Amino acid sequence: MARRKKRNTTRSHHGLQIITLCISTAMVLILLGMVVLTVLTGRNLSQYVKENLTVTMVLSPETTSQEAQQLCRRVKALPYINGLNYVSKEAVRKELAKELGTDPAEFVGGENPLSASIELKLAADYANNDSIKWISQRLQRMRGVAEIDYRKDLIETVNQRLRQISIILLVLAALLAVVSFSLINNTIRLAIYARRFSIHTMKLVGASWGFIRWPFIRSAIGQGLVSSLLALLVLGGGIYALYTYEPEMTAVINWEVLAVTAAAVLLFGFFITTFCAWLSVNKFLRMKAGELYKI
Image 1 (cartoon, rainbow, N blue to C red):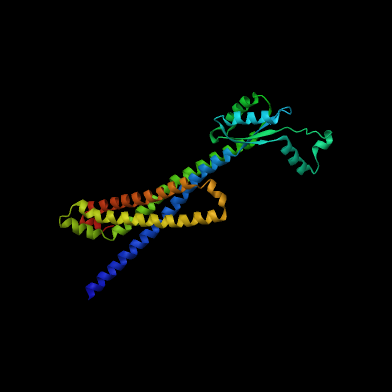
Image 2: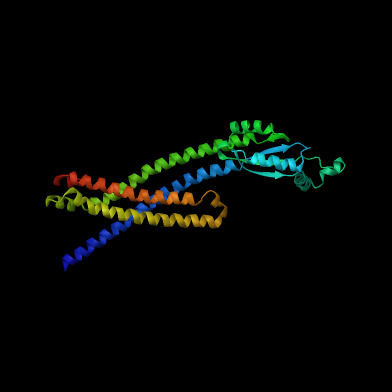
């Protein structure tokens, strides 16, 4: 009876140890998943911001609507143009009249003195001042174009801030990867430490290292997968709440980002727990009986 009670206590302790290990690993994987998600979202946000910077082509006053449409088709076919929006003279007049509270045509005898324009969205790779300067020179030579207008200071500021954010996120990801490895490795090592005498006993009866190592590796694989699934459930719930609060986040947190984040969490959870278990078991396999009492 006492032996059975002791065995049940040992199993209960071992089960609690596994649960604690899974929860601890899942918490680390949640942090890692958040960093991966942030890095990928930052990349998409950078592209989204760059692709929404506007370069305005102001057309000559004598340019007809038909000529403007032909110009739009020519410009849209260029490889560095991501999209465009044609703003007619009448639309400009109405917008200005709304802002001023009076029709500007009244001051010039009823004629519309304003010019039509084409608002351009550039491909993300060309959204920097050097490329825009070169693009502006090419567009300026097109027939019907009077002026190219863009916010040079804004574009430079946006690119500088995005570079700084990218560097910070990459450094944070690298540091967290190292910290995650250390935490998970220590957690698994403590779990295997409690069974170091069992490892030595099996070694004494002639069991091979591979035979001794396999149960620990198999257990680590299961714990890694369970921890990864727990982490993904928490991350998924957080992303769903974010989508509910701000539906426009789908522009930067798309399915590609979600798939890469999920794959990263699963792979990291699987490989890191397996590798740490392999290292820890090998450490105790190399030890002699006397050394086991000194650690």
